[in-house]
Image (cartoon, rainbow, N blue to C red; front, side, top):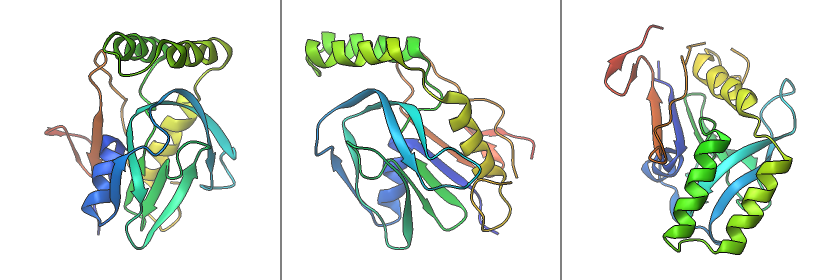
Length: 184
């Protein structure tokens, strides 16, 4: 039996690389703010979800045997799965609007994104809400799944955590998370 592995943002990129994929600078620059991602997960989920993005690097080429399950206008590989035990997502289901606003301001102050880029991202946040609960459900269902079907059944993730603007890497593996025992 394989342990479940879920890579989020940098974890998505590392997981792809560890399996033989290629990562690098995003071909279209920073992706920060709300983005609509198209999904090919299951008939039980909507065909697209609004997600929080904050990345300058991305998966450029998938490992062999991996399958794209999510993409956006800006990023071709927003989510992938590898068999029934590994999944990577570029988005941040754990980020709130406040965390994203903090990151936008921080990146603007550090001159990593332009003021105009920041204003566009903030304006979109005023109009739309990220589908955080739906993304949590996608992640939970993947971790809970016991068969080769994605997104319909298995293990429980108790919550997503974020600490200021410093959450960049999440990987959950089977029964252990961040060195703590997790009930299964």
